[in-house]
Image (tube, rainbow, N blue to C red; front, side):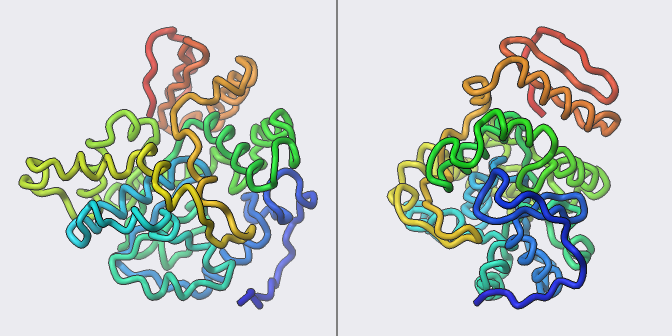
Length: 341
């Protein structure tokens, strides 16, 4: 079922198929959104009914949300399924945790409506586009962000796979230039991150703000943090029995990539069927070094640093062995160690 939603206001168009996916982009309230997904967002804002027990996973695209989906889903359902018979062995993460605006965009909103509570759903919408019914409810939001340089690289590879080959949409340099201008899916990324960051400071009990690189470094610690935030903390007996470590192993990128369900098959999206395998590439920190020059990294770091100035959000970016530390209004070259926040 396709949407019959009528738009009662003009949508500012971008160039037809400029660099990504198969649809025109629209600039809506300062956010670049594929047209079909925008229609899903507007439909969702009118029809979606949140529940107070809902848990929403949010991120800019290619920031680690697939991994976060499996971590949260397996944590919430750990008493429902034996880990060796867990649905993640036979279902792709996006089948276990649906993408809200995509389901509304493709006429599959009923999938969300029938999920038993507590529901877990994902979104790429910035906080500014969430409906008041969500932001004003008792639901909880988990947000994950990632070094924008790795986001850019991961997004570029993902787009090339969808479009059938490297450079069929744009060269990496062209994609990079657009990204630095904030022109990418649900961009600009700096506004996306800052929106949830500011809300997490105001309502830490409602919004949990996480860094992808931190989760990579200490997955067990963050698995416990997620469980506590969602209201289902691990018991002492579970910790003694190694349940947390077992869930972390089930959710590892290596385990997920090796599962048959993620090697083949596909699922419906607003861009047509997408192979499950496309969602698993490397999942590591610092892969941007294999694709960017030092000058490219410095330019993007400077853009992000300027946008984050005065926010209180601390960022450490490594550039080929050197460290740039941005803390509020200060940007200095320390040459010390890498610390990610």
